[in-house]
Length: 138
View: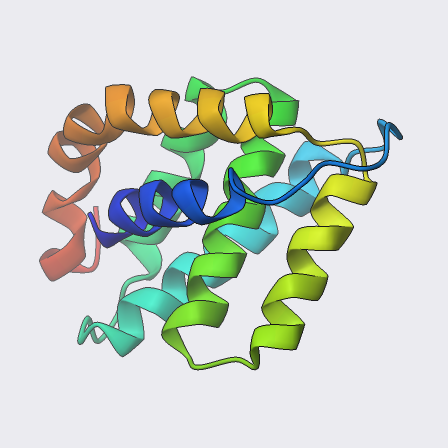
């Protein structure tokens, strides 16, 4: 799915940014799931999928079940930055998102670990969830 490709791309971008803060405050898994779902729907619609809600619900749950809470939030930020890049957001807005990410205590190791996890789960995620992309329902 495009989500996995976007996440891997953004992981490469974020891994070059400096980490500066050590605060470890993370969103709840429910809030993260809601954000992952919304980003997935938005990116999928721009990619030409007319009703991606079912496939995005699938991938949101699949990613959440495949990662611990910290990694799931990292994936969420990677997706958000990917969406910002795809939609032509100002570079200053992208940089602000990345700076906020590191200020919340995330590190380059987090980015690299999540990128590796995404590579590991991508094929199975596609196999499980892509069937819902065109069908639109279970």
